[in-house]
Picture 1 (cartoon, rainbow, N blue to C red):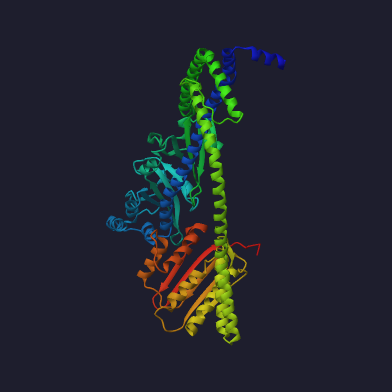
Picture 2: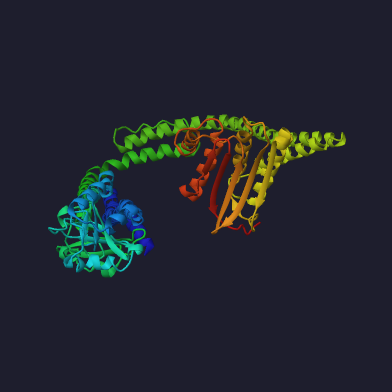
Length: 596
């Protein structure tokens, strides 16, 4: 059969052979690839939309948590506010006394003016002498029957409710609700902090897809389209029970159109009730662009295929003769004749091929000349690389020469009876070697304290009795892993600035303790200290974005490394009192290095 096919192809006219090859090799694969590309584009557009929506939901989740943190912090502060306690539990003898008390208590209004996230603050109390002034509201039967009030009275945890508008309670916002107990008065009240609906809606206004946030009761508290706020999820007809299914990515029909729905959950800090974040988009809308591109591409490909088919039919009979001529000239090149010049005429593809043939022959001649030149360049490159290696070896010899020189000085001092100088030189060499060997990984408390003790002994040799130091460890902390060069800069800062402008002896103490699974490191000196203004400037330099000057570089380096590795709460903390001394301390999560 193979022989028959080969015989048939050999006897087929060039035009028919080109047409058959075109259909088999070009047209069919292009149509198959086009279908695959169309499907791929559709899936890619859909996956991209889902990924974008998931990212948007995560962003909204973070923004919402930050927004809810403001009323949470306010409620935490009011929980222990003595003025609120007195205001809510005082028995007023008359309206004049009550009005004066209302005028004097402006904390709620100040919070509303200070934080744009807060729309209003209410406090509900069972004090019968209070009058509703839209801030302090006496509890009546209608309020007691409200679900949010009953939930708040069960405990002091934070709850979130969307509270609808009423004439005597104009809220109509997402609100924080929590109980405020007053044990000494044997009473309690309910604090309500209403969030600004404008801030909630503005957070979602730029979202490309329909996005909404619902509380635990299924009431929409914020949405891309503000008219949805206040409605329930059931009224929006999402096609399935969002609160029952939980977080995830779902497919459903909304208003008869296939759609994708991304559901996530948010539980604010210190809260017992959370929120559901929902983002949905129509599948048809997303793939519409991909389908349009695919259709345009398919039409273009089909047009090209038809035109190519017509052109092949017309020009196929013109090809054979010139191809034979070109084949003859290629044969001469194959035999080693690189001075052949193609004489095939025309400006079509075969003419271009002929000119390319001539360029190829010229390029071959040029490449043969360049091979020799490239060989010479390779030889010169090898010599240059050897020279670089020699320089690298020389740069490695320099530190060894320095250590050998320090060792020679130490031995000479030891032989001359200068034990203190010999010890100091040994410590200096040890300190320099440790600094050169240290990498970007972690070290142990024991290794770091070896460097600190070496540095302090060198400085004690320099300053004599003016410098006194202590290094204290409690518990099994020597094996704990810490970042390298994290304590020595603090000790160096304490020595330099502690001895500055003080004639009396200065004590530098390094205390390392383990508390609550955190490693606490404190470096203290009883030097001249700093004024409050100086301390504030120092903290601003090490925590700010501007490049510090002088000694602040080391402190800022340590602060930024701690903040990058463990978070802002693990940065440096500095306390200083003028003429009393300075304390620099920090904490890192404790973690025993099992390899040590």
